[in-house]
Amino acid sequence: MKKILLIGFLLITAQTTFAQGLFKRLSFGLKAGGNYSNFTDAGFDTEGLAGFHGGAIINFRLTNKWSIQEEFLYSTQGAKIKDKLFGETDLKLSYMSVPILLKYHSNIGLYAEIGAQANMLIEDAKNTAFEDFADKVDAGAVAGLGYQFRAGPVKGLGVGARYYHGFMEVGKFKSSSIKGDFKNSVAQLSVFYIF
Image 1: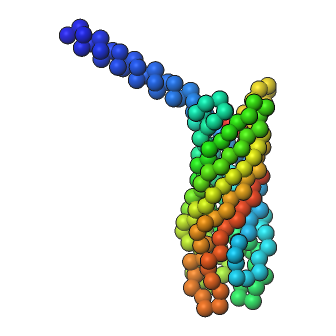
Image 2 (image 1 turned 120 degrees about the horizontal axis):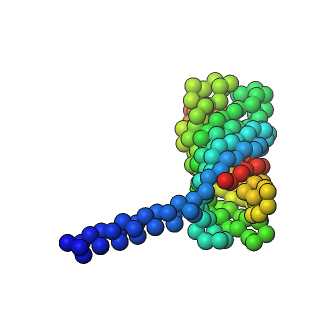
Image 3 (image 1 turned 90 degrees about the vertical axis):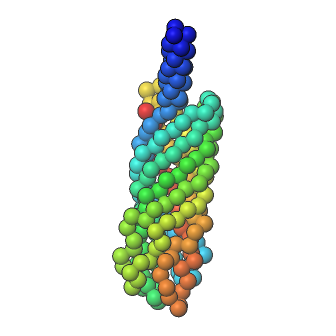
């Protein structure tokens, strides 16, 4: 009986120690910044559109140099349209963006990141002749560079630049004059703080 109790105690202790070790590798943060978005491969004239993003960060440190980061961001995207069908208007789309990134951190605070991103449509473009302009789901690749302070009074504060290129067709509408096979393209500049 004593052996069973001892083994049970050791298993519980090992599990608790393992969980504490994992929790020490987790960090959380906040992020906000500006977007400059456009549609690529569109069959109509477009220009870039300014927007913004903001949300939460979860980072899991694998080693001193490598980490995996997931973000939950509200992001406004779209494009300025100059076309006969739409007229001259801003087509604004709002997404919940969830990038999952592999990050490499240098000793001096510079980092590089690459990964995949899924976008779920929150608000469709309102100023079109279509009931449903954009598809509900978008996905693509993302890559970026940045700097994060590793010491001192501003430890955890950082800035980053990132580019997202969508792989899925944005347009859900049906039209004989234009195709909906254009894709999202977004450049982002962010300020973040990881606690």
